[in-house]
Image 1 (cartoon, rainbow, N blue to C red):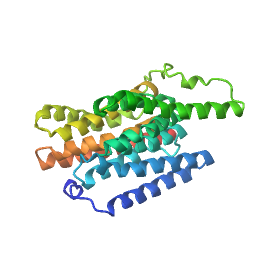
Image 2 (cartoon, rainbow, N blue to C red; image 1 turned 180 degrees about the vertical axis):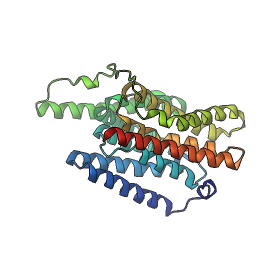
Image 3 (tube, rainbow, N blue to C red; image 1 turned 30 degrees about the vertical axis):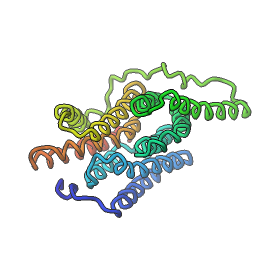
Image 4 (cartoon, rainbow, N blue to C red; image 1 turned 30 degrees about the horizontal axis):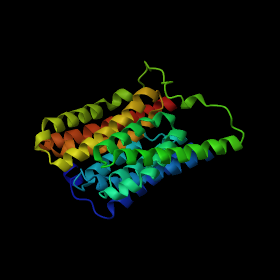
Length: 301
């Protein structure tokens, strides 16, 4: 299986994976159909589909089927069919953010910072717990921009535009009270019941091993690989902050991790020294995700 997935993907690969996910998401939403759920599913599907094209933009996976397959497995395993609208919007806005920030054109990235600020503000309005994404973008600006003050101003200006539009619209519609959900220091309660999360322990341990192995061989990496992997890790950490503080039993938050984790795991499997290790690692990941899915379904019944 690993050898098959190690082959280079072609132009027909991504449409096939997207079509498969469309069938899965449609089937799950037919079983839990509501008008709002259908809207959330459509937005989530758009975000997930766009993320497939980010593998090529990030360019850490050698254009093989492996990361596409792992990403598909993670999405299928963590998609419940009852998507929260905030998570769906976050999937879509995060895909657009990464598409802009991974561009090789510095001028394009700089000119798009107003749009980036707009997307971050939109993400916050629908999912207040997504505020760590602002920290990620600010760090990215600090590390890559030649004019940090100018870039930061454009970012904050884009956020201000959306917030002003949102608050004026809300005021005209008669919404004058403050929603406590936007007070981000109101973190979720620590859950003693981990639910189906222990099933993901093998995949989590392999992800940690991959990060450790990357830094163990850090000096052997090319400057471009170091930069891109650091970019991916900062993105992952910003997502983990939201998940640790606010997820609770809303396991659809884990969908946000599918893209960076699939890239990290695919690189780890590729660099394992023995074929049997690669094959075993792949099936450990698949079975842990499927076990998580089965336990999640059983708890919802």
